[in-house]
Amino acid sequence: EAGGRTLWANFVNAGFLLAFLFVAPGLLSMLPKAALGAILVYTGWKMMHPSIARHLLVIGREQLVVYAFTIAAILATDLLVGVCLGALLKLGIVVYLRWRSAPPDSQAASLWGAFKEVFQDPVEQVIEGEQGATVVVTHPVVSFNAYRLDERLAALRASGRRFRVAVRDRTGVIDHTSMEYLHHLEQEVGGEVIDLPADRLTALSAHPESMRVVKKKTA
Image (cartoon, rainbow, N blue to C red; front, side, top):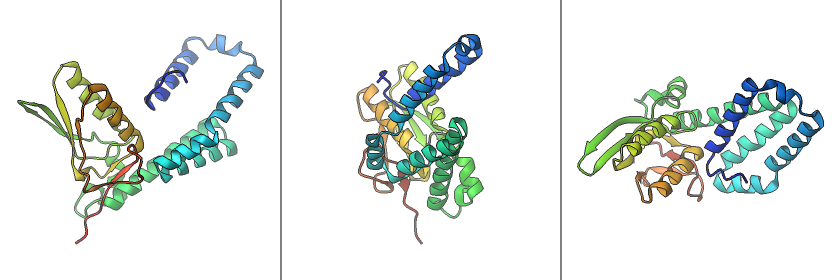
């Protein structure tokens, strides 16, 4: 409603709220509790509207699972604990999917290795060429490390160089948040700049921004 186009808007909003807590805590304490309660009720209703659940189900069942679990956790505990538990569930899902799709000889063949991969820089290298730079992605791109890819691409865009993002099948997992980011990136630059291995990277639903998981190679 405020004009946010991606999930990064939520992060920016939370950042400003946190900054305000440190800069002007006295002003916040002057707000009537009844008004704050009304805002929370309204926000909670907007978050729990049935249309949101239907939309998430179209994107992917795992999105609906995280959404429903987070709501239940918030109601059972409090807002902060519930959100943290929802984030942990999301982390568990991407780690499990990465571990399940990993080749036997890779770092992600163990759960601990898969856990470390979802926080690593997904970019293996940036290859410079006459037609521009090729950003080679070989690690999972998920909400926990997508900012690293964004930093690389932001630097290329700031320099005015052309680029392409080549996603290898070793990437393993691209979650919905990152797929949304990549689609938004293509809209901003006005062209197709993302190379996805469609024959190996399987979408979990028909939605263009659904999570992608690499098919595990069989012997």
